[in-house]
Length: 340
Image 1 (cartoon, rainbow, N blue to C red):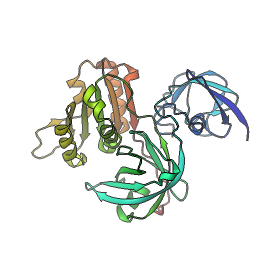
Image 2: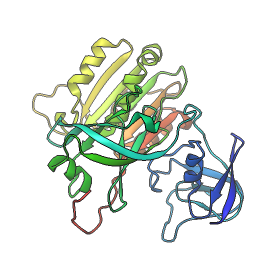
Image 3: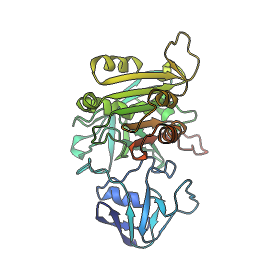
Image 4: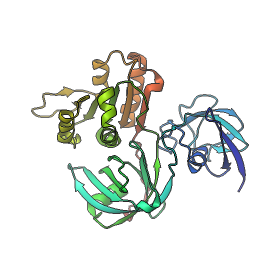
């Protein structure tokens, strides 16, 4: 296996990088977490500037929207020693990406198409995550599905997912049809850098659908920070049932000074007297000047992209103050085998 050196600036980190694995994989294996999200070359969150050296992409992969002189670290491979400039999150000391078993504790349907799944990861594995991160379920044929943790880490090894039923979705259909307590799943992680930054800026959380899950983890884990900085949660859906934890969030709003909740529906909902329209447009209307804020957006990629463009172009949000995790759906294989 050919090995090169990967240097990450401005951190000044130098690590081994194989020609077969991605730059991001090399960084994660060494315990460093450059900014990333989908790990599939679709969200561009991992874009990094190449300062020296050469890279290649896997055969058949064509990046879209990547600036000249930059690469997507989740797909790029070293062909020489390489130096990149990438943003590193320093709030994950000692954290390791690992693959382990997880035992299902509970499967609870919270709406007609969303299930809350609680699992236990053996504490002896050393598995640890930051609020906002995700893990991947590794299916028997090697395909993967990504789910964000919706709970605050407490050292118990318990994790919670919010799983939306996807038409023809292999894993989500398995969750709805047959997943039960005591079943075992194989997971790998944690991944992602969608985490609350150490700052004094007021916070706007923006979610669509189950994009609420990682934001819920942040809200639960950072109650004191939220109270000090102030936060508004905008949660959008087509109908009220899409906001499957509506009552829970309303209760949080009452119990936690500094948190305000703004639900937004884009469809017709009988008796709905709240905000209507696209959720990012509600934020734009309420905050014409976002120059002093941080925005954390998660959910549908179209919503996330629209929010980034609108807030930075029309509302004065610094581009570096927009943090996101776009939920990209993996294409399903042609086979219909539902075995996981």
